[in-house]
Length: 116
Length: 114
Image (cartoon, rainbow over all chains, first blue to last red; front, top):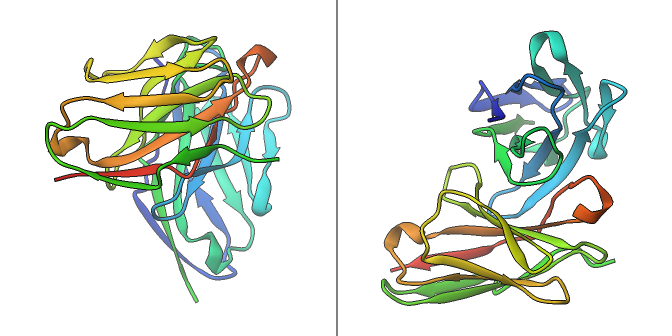
C-alpha cells in the first residue's frame, strides 16, 4: 500500500523567510501526490497536486512542490512566508493501487508557525 | 460555484445516541468520501460513495454507515456513539467519472460525544 511520511512535526520560520516542508512517499510506480493545508478547526484546502509530467508543480498561494523520484520525495516550498501561512500542512497519496481515486492516506502533518 | 458544504457545523451527543451528518458535493462532482479527524491527528478514511454504492471502506466498524442520493449528496450515520467518536468529520467530493479523482474538502462537522 502507498504511504507518505512527513518527518517534521513542527516547523517555525520568520515572516519573509523561505519554507520547505518535507514529504516522502513509499510506492514502486509513479504515485499521485497531493498537498493540503488546514487552519485550526477548518476543512482541508488543496494547495497542489502531482499526477504526471513536469516534476515542478505550481499551486495556490505561491506554493510549489517538486517530485523527485530518486529521493522518493514531494517537498512543498514557498520563497517568502506570510503570517497567514501559519497552519497545518498534510501530504497525501491515494491508496488504490496506482490509480488516482480512492481513499487518501495522509502523512502525520506538519504544523507551521510563523514569527513576525 | 459553491464548494463542498456540510451540516451541521457542530453537534453534541451523548454516548449510545445516533447521529447523521450531511454533505453536498461541489457542483459537477459525483463521488463523496468521508474522513474522521481526531484532535491533533491526520484524517482517517471512513468510506467512499460513487453511483450510490459504497466503493471503498476504511478500518471503521459497522456502526459507521452511509448513503449517497441520486443528486450525489451523502449522509454519514454513526450508531451507538462512543466517547472516542468525538472528532471533526470531513466530507470530500470529486469527479471520478472524469478519470482523476482530486478530492475537495468541506469545512467539516465537529462532533462531541459526552
